[in-house]
Image (cartoon, rainbow, N blue to C red; front, side, top):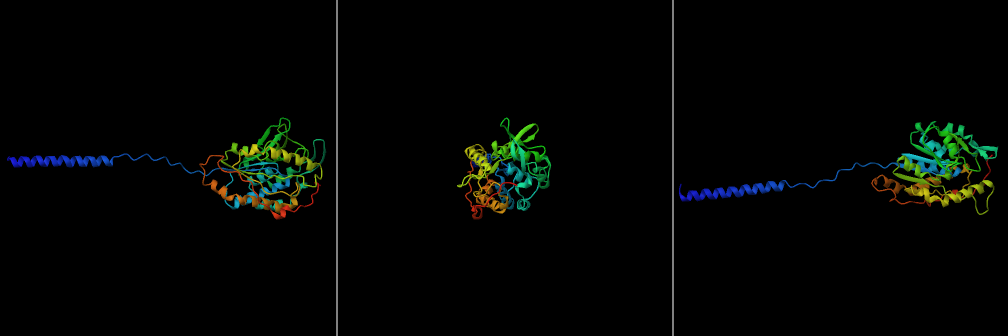
Length: 329
């Protein structure tokens, strides 16, 4: 082989090695690891609980709140109620629509579930509530309810909170509505029980225990006595408890993401004849905060306590006109 041929062969071999090196380098570039992607977290809609506080006839405002939530497509996964809130809650959870409740509220009066009683433990008894609730609540036990419900009462002897989530509905609601001094206590399972407002004025904590991720609290804050002073002993009893509840409100507000206060000033405790105005007060109060509630559906990962509490300032002009009140007949 000539010298020129040998040199050509060497050059070709050298070029081949360079080509192989370039190909190998290119392959290595293609093999660079892709940074690991964070795992996809499935979006879950937060469970919403609604806490309904007490307030006698003023509790009809709860119906307005529930009606707007339903119309706006806001899901309610749990309800907890105290006193009148337990009546509204039991009705809703059993399948009665807010519109049906509106119709019932328009005709119900104090005498439909209470009567005078010559008893040393109270002026009235709410035993008529047995028939009243059996007519409007479509279920007999908590286990049959379409939406989970908690009903708050208080053990008169020990002072302990008693929260019903199972068993018969009627006796639990009667106990929750046994306002001290006005109604005689109700005995359930060997315990003498009175109104739940002494232990859970607005039952937000039971909702957390049930599994609610977001809690809407409806607080019916109103004075029982106007500038003219009390009309009778019931006004005095009610005003004393109203003052106490206001002083202790921080305990239940800790477990609430959102607090609304329908404007029920000017309504008397037995003003059932003003049902329409009361329900309108509830509707106006919830409309104010609907954007915030709808944001809950987009912020499932926001920790509890980040969302603000809101006090409704909505007023119903008709609701501010005082109306004469009568003692229950």
